[in-house]
Length: 264
Image 1 (cartoon, rainbow, N blue to C red):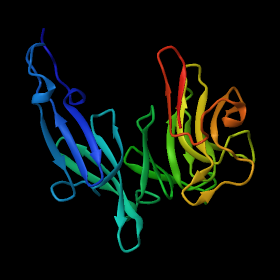
Image 2 (image 1 turned 180 degrees about the vertical axis):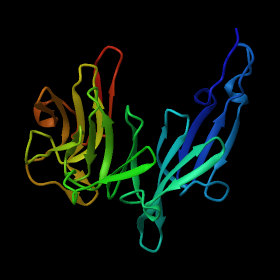
Image 3 (image 1 turned 90 degrees about the vertical axis):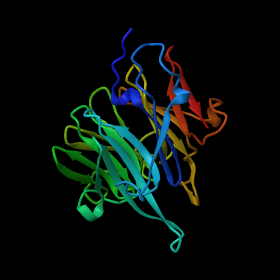
Image 4 (image 1 turned 45 degrees about the vertical axis):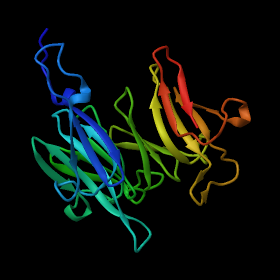
């Protein structure tokens, strides 16, 4: 049986602070080829490639086979993250986009998403930026789109709308040029601190939230947990409703049977 290898079959990624490694699996001529353990590792850093920064926060492969890397940069003097940007690797060449190139709203990148039209969404600490047909557009609080500029998660739903989770402003929804924001002030969302997003097979959108974010504590009455939005209605599950073991939601997954798993 012959194998026809593609880039998707060849690349396996492993990330850590200061290290981006690619595991290359040899493309066998037959099904009885060498095991993956005989593959080779190749490491990309700022020292030997066009990677913007060594702290990689997000990965995405676009429809043309290009690999996008969201990054952020640690400043030991400022004792915080001060920059980064997004890099794209395609056919051996690197390209970087940042505030310096007029591309992003902020250089600290937290999330990446490619929509069905081929647009690339980059969630940053300065709003969300979209790259489409060679041009960048940034959406932010100041422009009237988002509930908060610190973007934490991105999701495209079955209708083609894009959900943008934020650190302090709930979740915002973009569809056909218009924005709508859901927060504890305007909906039954469990908390304004959004950590993760998931759409289930029925079209329901799950929003994982928290009641703390570092030293930041949300207003009284926002306990966190996970909220589901379906056909215009919100329902929240939390420790208070005996649904969750903890209200700090960190991960969401829908299994093959349609069940939703909530990591806390």
